[in-house]
Structure formats: C-alpha cells, structure tokens
Length: 509
Ligand SMILES: Cc1ncc(COP(=O)(O)O)c(C=O)c1O
Image (cartoon, rainbow, N blue to C red; front, side, top):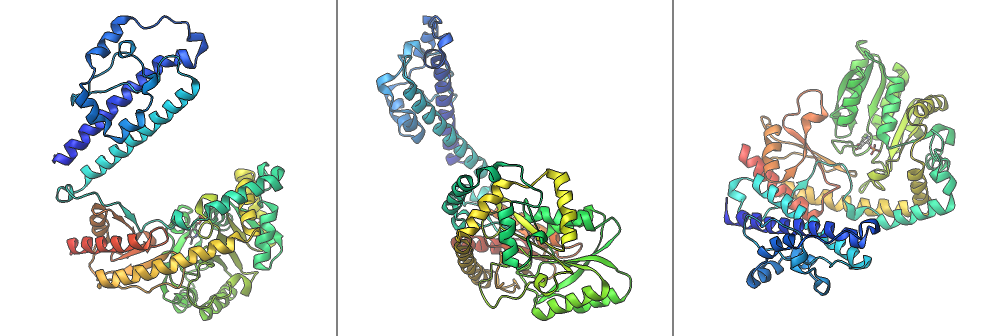
C-alpha cells in the first residue's frame, strides 16, 4: 500500500473513533435531554469515567486532530463540554490517535442537542465519502494509485444532467398543483391519467382527449401496448439496432422479433418490403423510433415515413411510433409525426423524461379510442391509476410555459454536447465512425472490424468511463459498436471521457 492510502486509512480510523465516542456520549446524554422517564437514573459510576481519563489525548495530538474538517465539525461546544471524568468508556483507535469530547454536557438544552446531532451527521457523511473515495482508489490499477483519482464519466445513461433540469420550475409547479387542485392531485384519480394533462397532450397532438392515455413513463405505455397487442409467437418488426429495453420486453413476451437494418435516414424500407413480400413474416406491429433514434441518433426521413405507412396499410400492421426525443431537435427542420399522417394505423408514445426530467415518470400513448379504452382497463387492473401528483405537477409545468423554456435549455445543451463529442472523437479517436445527430441524446460509434467492445468496455471502466456496448441493442453482432449518450455529461466531461476512451481503445488494440 502506498503512503497516501496508509494516511487515508489512519484518518478514517481517527474519524471513526471520534464518531464512536460521540455516539456513546449522545447515548449517555439522551436520558437527561430527551427522555424524561429516564432522567432520574443514577449517574454512571466514577469507575467508568476512569477509563476515559486513561485515553485522554496529549495537547499536541488534540491540535493535530483538530486540523481535520471532521474535528472542526464536532468542535465548538467547548462551553458545554462534558467533563472527561463523567464520559463513558471508549475504544482507543489502533492508530493510537487520540480522541476528545466535543459533545454537549448533561443538561444541554434541546437546541444544543439538535446542533450536536447535525455535527454528528456531517461527520458520518464525511466518513462515508472518505471511505467511498478510498475504496475507489484501491480498486484502480496500481500505476494510477498515486495520481489523484479521476471522477468517473458516464456516457451510458440516457438521462439529462441535473444542471439542465428546471428544478425551481418544478418546485413552483408542485406548489401550484397542490394549491390549485389539491383534491385531484392527491386522489387515486383515473387510469387514463390526470384529466388536465390528458387534455393538454391531446391539444398538442390535435386529437380528442379520448385518444390519449397518460402513464407512469412511456416505458409503461410500451409495456401496456405490448401486453395488449403482442402474444407469444407473433411477428414484430424492430429496427437494428434498437432500444435495448424494447428488445427485452418483446423477447420476454415470446414475440418473434425481426430486426431490419437502420440506415442514417431510418429503417431500410426496401429490406422491410422484401421481408414482407417473402410471406414469411406477418407482423402485428413495427416498433419505430423516428427521431434521433435510441441508440443510433438517426432520424427517419419524410419519404421513408410515407413508405412505411404504405407498407403498414398494405400488410395490415400497426406502426408503433416511439417518440420521446421529438422535441429535442437542435438542427434542421422538424418532420411530421406518422401519427399525424395516419392516425388510424399509428399508435404513438412519448415522454416527459427527456424534456422535463425522468424522475417525474410521466409518459403517454395516443391511439385509436377503442385501443386506448382497452389499455385503460389494463392500466386500472395493474395500478388503479398512474401517479396523479406527478401528472398534476407536469401539467402545471406545461401550462405555465416552463416546458418550452426547459426544452430550449436542454436543446442548447445537447447541441453543444453533441458538437463537443464529435470534435473530441475526431481528435482523439480518428478510427471511430459516426454520424453526428441532429437532436436527441445519443451517438452511435462504429470502430474498426475486429474491435472487441466487451474488452473496450472493461478497459474504459478501469479508466473511469462507462458506455453501453452496441451488442446490447441487437439480437446478434454489433461487437465493434457502442452507444455514447451525451445528455448527462458536460462538455468538459465529454472531452476528458473521450480522451480516456481513446486510451482504453489503444490499450486493447
Ligand atoms: C425509445 C425510448 N422509448 C422509451 C423510453 C422510456 O422512457 P420513459 O422514461 O418515459 O419510461 C426510452 C428511454 O430511454 C427510450 O429511449
């Protein structure tokens, strides 16, 4: 072990001893300050105090210990410090580091105790952070153990970073939701969703509210739709690659999943037409992510939207338009939804996860009334109703116009992050092939044939970088591909992360 780790261990040990002592002191104080029934107990025998006397630190050691933030956190109650002779027995840490009392004395008032408890909690937090940092340091390769630990960078998560979430706007929306509709926001509500949000979504899509069902995230909407429409042994078409959770969900249902190659302008409609004409496949539905696809970042062209709908009409299947990224275009012209092009053949899903925040868990389906009614019954049997309070907050957020500002913030950040990612890849990893997206959260990267993305993920992990392997988004193949999500990382983290990713790549090739 190097000296730095030994020092950290010693420091941890000192803080732990301090914490143990403080807890012991608090336990002793509780009867006097907090529990009247026990207040008349006889004081601890003098012999117990002797033990603490024997562990009293030297002045020099006290000064050394006082230099730590944890010690500072616990200090400051000297006026009410318990006399050493009345403190309980304690353990002397193995390091020989001394401990002192900074707890409130017996008889301290409740404000003292509360302040003391705060300090105690702070010390516990510091201890936990130090411990986690030490664990992280020990798990890194020996060569880098002496360098300061680099924070980990995740290109794996399809979620916005906290700095682009309108937390204040959400807080205000929550206050308004509870003030303006306390009954509706706190009730079970109805399985079709919070009525005001349902209407707001219907307006956005130019449809009747009866065609809308608001769910706990669009993942739930997908699950209901699959449960209602897709049975074991039925054919379903997906893009290759596609959202890994969709693949998982369809396979768990026993569907026969047919993956049709995704091009930069969307699903290969010529290959799909060939598959359909072969007569081997009669799909119940085709799952399509039309805008800034997850995982590839590609967008389905208008011509292909038309071709796809024509094929759906000819072969009588439903197009499931899974569209959580539609609002996040940062370049180029928006395209019409397939829902607006053929409302009877398309079931549409979207979400507030990517534009507001995933924690609200609000998504929705738009489809033919009969289908929405059937799924509403399924929803009722599953959870009575989705979260009314979340949906009421999202409604207030939308109705106030905060949603437009939030979309603007997220879009601007995504534009900058996508550009930073492209430049960093060109600079650090020229072997990487990719098409910069026009919106959304993701970039698909292809490395030279023969690259083992599993080994790359492992090597990158050692350097503190995470991404999702391309193999997770396909039924087979994809060993030289990966998905980089850029919504949850700042430009600085993107630069650092790509530098480390390139180093990981060099280490395995
Ligand atoms: C294509 C697609 N559909 C659905 C979802 C699920 O979103 P939600 O958070 O609304 O459940 C995601 C999330 O990443 C996604 O990328």
